[in-house]
Structure formats: C-alpha cells, structure tokens
Image (cartoon, rainbow, N blue to C red; front, side, top):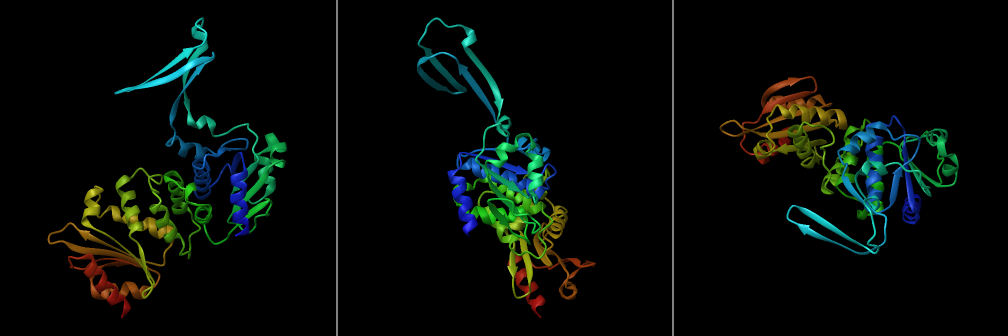
Length: 358
C-alpha cells in the first residue's frame, strides 16, 4: 500500500511522464503500457514514450486511435478571434492588429496525434513496464542517459527476478501485467479510467499466457467491461468477438461444483449475426487464454422447438461422464457437446447442476 501511495503521489507531482517497455514486448506488456499511456492522458498529464524507438506493436495499435487535427498558425498580433458554427462545418476569424500583412504570416496544416508519442522533452518521472534489469533500461535510453539518471523511476513488473532498480518498485508474481495494473488502477481512482484504458487492459489480459490457476482474472475482466472496455482490439472477426465478450460478461463461478458457467440467448446470436459454429471460437479462446479447469457454456439453439444445447470441458473426467450419462451428445477427450431438450436456459442450468452435484 505504501508503494501504491508513493506511485499516486509521484504521478500527481510530475509535470512530464515518460513510459518505457521492451522493444519486443509481448501483448500483455503492450496492452498494459498503452493502458498506462491513456490513463495518464485522462488526468491531463504530459506523457510520452521514451527510449531510442517506440515498439512497432504499440505504434500499430495506436493507429486505430489516431485523430487528425488542424494546426492553424498566424504569426502576427491579433485584436480579435472568434468562430461561427455552420451546418456543415466551422469558420474561424482572426483580426490582425496590423493591417499590413501577407500570406506568409498564415499557415494551416493537418497534424497527427501520433507525432506526440515520443518527445525530447525532459521527464521528471519514468514508468517502466515489464523490464527486469536496469541495464536494459539504460540500453533503451542510451541516447539520453543524463535524463534517465536525473528522474524518478517507477518499476512495474510481474517477474520475481526483477532487480528492484526503481525508486518505487511494484513487483507482483502469479498474475499478468495487465491484471496487476488493473489492480493498481483501482487504487489510483476512477479518474484514471476510460474506454481506451479498459480496452487495452482487456487486450493484454486476454492475450496473456500467465493466467493459469488465477481466479482473479474473470472478476477483473468483468470489472473492465463495466468500465466500458471492449475486446475489439483482439480480432476483426466481429461476431465471434462479440460472442466472446458476452460469454465473459455472463460468466459465473459455481462453488458447489467448482465450475464456471456462462449462457447465451438466441437473441444474443441473432443480434450479432452469429451462429453456433462461432461458439467453437469462443470455447477455444476461453480454454486457451484462461486455462479454466472446468467450463460450461449453454446456448439457445435456433431449432424448432427451441432447445438449449451445451458444451463442457473439464480436467475432471467425472463431470463430463455425468453429462454424457444424463444428456444426448458426443464426447471427445476432456470435453463434450450435448443437447438438453429443454426450452429454458434457467431450467437447463438447474438440471445440469443437479446432475453434476450427484
């Protein structure tokens, strides 16, 4: 708690904040770094990426967030400035003090928001993400070591081999960087959060391979959804991603059977232009990314009459055997797909849990 408080105080006191991660940072570190960038922007901090170059993945993801701006410059004193809104735009008026002016005094250009990602400005606070050794920090900042040595360094990582080289060290094992930063974000306050922050943390969290046996990740993901996060950064396959998002939002843990359960209605499928084939993608993503030991997904089939179908996978073979002993279906390895022949998800869920508890 002391280190978190020191972090918050340091951020509030800083005028310019630099962010640094590895050039070959994985998706977890990339998502965390971008979430930090937008969190600091959200509290109106002057923030930029430092180092000899910005990681290519970060630039690539930010292109989707890029906003073009018009930069209007008038190199003379003015006595009046005003604008008029029109139905199809806006008109800006400048009245110069000196009537003897020429076209060279005026210029207008389109600038990219990406131009401000890196800067030669001095930074009084540097936050590193997922860098274990200070010599790596020095190598990344070799073009301006005096600046590095003169600032306060905050070191955020989830690798216990970290050298604790910062004035503030936030090191936490057994979870992903994006999950850990989500916890830090909760402490810092809601003013740090927005849609971009939550979405990039979801990107990092769902892409991380460090979620094994960690039951904090599902509640964290649901918290990020609650704060307007979206999974759209993961893929261009919109129907599948929307179903994955809904599945995660609807997921609950049932302690009696030690299983995670989620359900999708027929309306969910229709509204997202999806079919039951897209659910294969959903189950695979949940199985690979979260490595949940036991998971059950139910959905309303578009057959007539309407019926509820399901898929289950579990490292406990007995659960799969109980499903196959009570419902018609096909099993393979540690999973099974089955039909309940029941019209209601609520009824089907109750019957399935009753079978699993026997």
